[in-house]
Amino acid sequence: MESYALTLIESANDAAAYHEIRHHVLFGGSEEYIRNGPEEVKAENLSLLLKFEGTPIGTVRLDQKGDNKAIVRLVAIVSNLQRQGHGTALMDQVARLALSLGIKELLVNARPSASGFYLRLGYSPFTFEPDNYGGIQLRKMIS
Image (cartoon, rainbow, N blue to C red):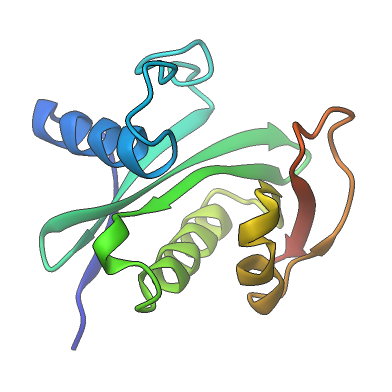
């Protein structure tokens, strides 16, 4: 049986893995990546690392917004493990965590190339931020 764990960043090793994955997968190794930007350190924003059989393979940040809503941000799976079901497992883990926090609505601002992934997971188009930075805004009600 596959073993996944979605954990808060609590150690230096976890933080290093979290930033390494995001820096390379989402930012292509660019110098534009900011490790600890202002949104990263807000208490309501949960920086999370997905481990598969103990090995860090993915990242996500869950920004709690009140009114039982949260925004799923910066989803990344290491490049050589993409398209193998790990992203779906990550999103399942995020939904479970969100429910445990009383969240009923998940929002995402997806890159156009990733919107099909979210649509397959039951997300639907929904505008929630005025400036979407060229992304596709989606939401999913969870229970």
